[in-house]
Length: 519
Image (cartoon, rainbow, N blue to C red; front, side):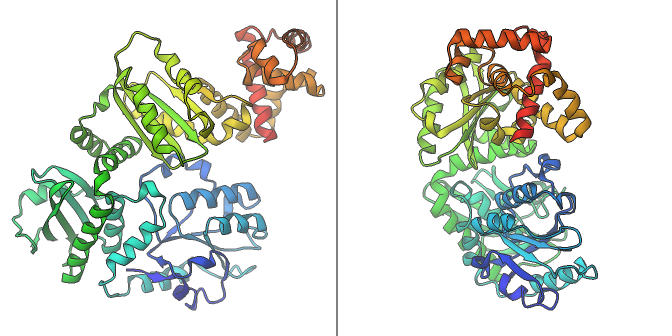
């Protein structure tokens, strides 16, 4: 179900709208509409950390809360694209947003992201007009003989690591608005996709009470249930269920769904173990405990034993598989539980059940220093002492809020502790609190604020060099004694001994804040 973008642009409610970017997407299928109520993505980053990919969706927004911030408008475009959104329909330009910036359009064009600008300076236009017309066209009965092509077309637009059996089934679920279960011959669930995703229906319990012959469809408790057995050479016999609430599935929908699964298994079934591991990591990050334990049991991974996480921000994915193999080879010498999965351009390494005598805290940094893949790693964040998977998820979300800023905040530094991440988050909150809070924080640096040499030296000493004179001298290309002399003068000027932690902390936060507002 859906409608081509070019068809929708001809509707009366969109006829006077202007396509500002995404002309290459005119033949893509729009499958749904949604609202972007909070357009400052930093305010809802945690809510958006899901394993859902919103292929074919258009977002309606006015950019109200970021109407004067072009940088955040660009960031929003990037994040929406990362989530799989097809584009946005932008309302009230000239009234809310003064104008659509060329920089925003350029960002969207580079990503093939659609921006549809509603008529400018018109406050009488309503969201409801577009919603009613577009959804009516989307939900209009369409032939279902092209389900395979439609889903595979969407899959082809995804990043390579998202081209999986599980994502294929999610797209199929959205297309048919149906629940899907895939099991092995022992009825152990491999994939379970609910529609809607927050459905509380116990699908497995429902299946246990129903007998369905192979290739047939029956009705039970307001559900139409279709069942088909499939054989795959890599994974053996599979049991495929479609469970649609209230309505029967057509023969064409059932047949096309089976064909789609067969194609997906042939394309990506060999990576089934890898896919499941990817799904396990996603389940941990999304707090899907039922799915997490089911997958962990299937993969024989002790998720309760996970106590350490490495987060590696990558700048080049061409050698990603080799990097992952190298890390797993290294980590398996020290840990019984080792999981590594790529999420976009970030490699997540989960480790547990330590089985060595060396200091655990030094292993991550030691790997970075000796890795043959140093150049493709922008940063590694070491997150120890995780008590459970909830800690994993919350720590991951915290790091992701600031990960992209780290190379610009800490010059020449690649390895970070979770404590440093918390301080960056704290400094960011100070900035968001307003000008008065920023001025109070920076007041510590007031005596040297006009001395660029001293300010640069202090920032480098505390942030980049970890208060190490030798490292700082190498960073600034000056003699070690020169650094010592400058730090002595800075301490005298500030009235703080920046070599003493209890006194340097305020200076550290102030330096972070200074660099953040200077980015």
